[in-house]
Image (cartoon, rainbow, N blue to C red):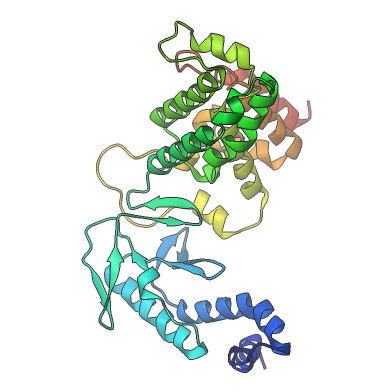
Length: 336
């Protein structure tokens, strides 16, 4: 008897059990049951093909995202998921199910119930938009950061707390709110400017310096003395994430990052990809960047060198790494 049969038998035995001795066992095995059920419903050629791999579902706990290239394929996947779920007890909640498409889409009805179709939705705390642009999520995160900063107003006004302590409080309470999920952001020049403006707004609010005051941004930063800018911290997370995925064996995340999609591209200038923004920040080619992150010590040197160049915000100009860091990294990789 193979594993699928065993899982099927266990599920039939435990789904109908009441609270009691079997409850803990059922709760413990629930993720395996959900995975089995979802795998059964998603065994289909429908999906998005990347690097020769067919991807039609992304799962996290009980949340499932189905993907397809056409409306008809997506409907078939959804109906199969609904049918497989009904076999084992869990039911598809139409009211909590949303549909999003890159193009125009009509409203759907499943057994008389209409499903909501929108241009964006929130998944695992991050906003996913139909155009795939990270700018929407960045703006949303900056707004949440402003709310978090406003909640600290009474603490920042206190004269009993020293300036270094206030700075550490802001970094601990505000920065994580803004940086949540930033590893996946494709950051453009306009996004960097928004992040810089938000950071300076935070430091001016902390120092009680209005924008009308005749104080330069550089003088504000000298008084605060941040070790690294907020944009630099976000870049550090993205570089660490790239190195982590690159050193892994073949995985879904690695396929999505380095694989190529089938089909044709629209006319016009190609949009910036996540990998393009990483290469731009490091001033390195993809081949050299791969070699750098394969070695952990060289990868740490790369992350340290690039992020430290983001310590200064002055007229929205950054100090890039240039060829010097690249030469040092190459020498370290070669062992010279």
